Picture (cartoon, rainbow, N blue to C red):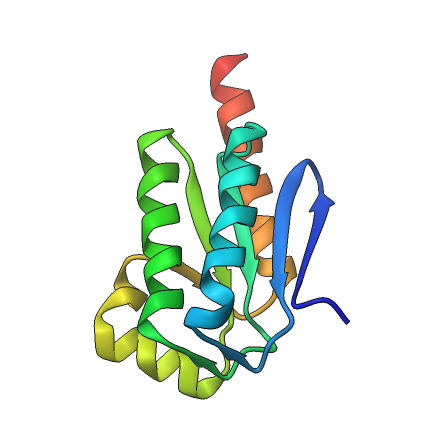
Length: 124
């Protein structure tokens, strides 16, 4: 199994982290993947951390930097339920307040689809 899997759903990119421990060792590779997503025009990215139990500060930093880039582009970064320890690290660092965190991928997708539908109604 690959450390990271990219897939699309409803026109949105989902980056799944298939690591129980996400550290500095994997952070640079993940950063490149997220930068590729942005260069391809994706301004809303879902990062599925449901398999991840631990993230070090470097990996969290990649998420924060990506979030800031996306916000400047009018987009957002959505996080799917990190493991318990990873969630506590996000709480400890204060990063959890930055991200929209969802229990499931379906919930994250629904939040995007609802906003997109509302935006389309306003424009019409």
